[in-house]
Length: 217
Image 1 (cartoon, rainbow, N blue to C red):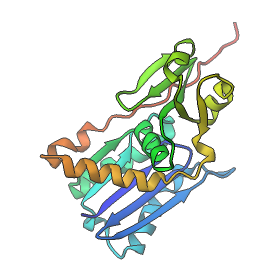
Image 2 (image 1 turned 180 degrees about the vertical axis):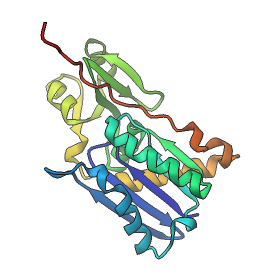
Image 3 (image 1 turned 90 degrees about the vertical axis):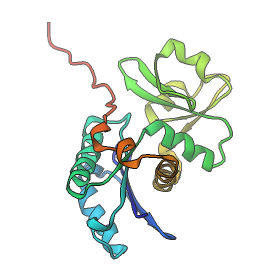
């Protein structure tokens, strides 16, 4: 099965293609002029060309629905929906937290949880069960004794917290594209009805809250 994966929700864009022992991946960083998600379509074409296949040869898509920025998630989900509609493809839905937790485990972190900045004094917390939206004051008890995989904002806010070790995933060389592919393949293999379970109609974005707008009083 030829599986195309892409993620524009995190700090970089990650694209991967895997099938029958073949695996290619591309990572795109932001620069001063362009946001990384702007390169998604050209890089998808590039990775398909490397594999010497066309979009019609792809059997399934795996994408990240967030939490993440509005611009980033919208880019990935728009491409996923168009390809699913045009090519009649299933779309496996992942979230940022499960990707980061599994990446940390693969990188040797023994007891990871994930904390991401949700803005407005709120944080996403994930220990493997469900994503919780919690206040800063309630986070201390949840993260105690964990290895906390987090973004740069959380790292700045909490890295001195006693009882937990903080790891800024943006500074790590986590194999996020490979993790996405493996998670997607695992979900496909465990599904009894791929068409129903992974319909593009079930794609739902989890946007990080936008900052509050202040007006002059």
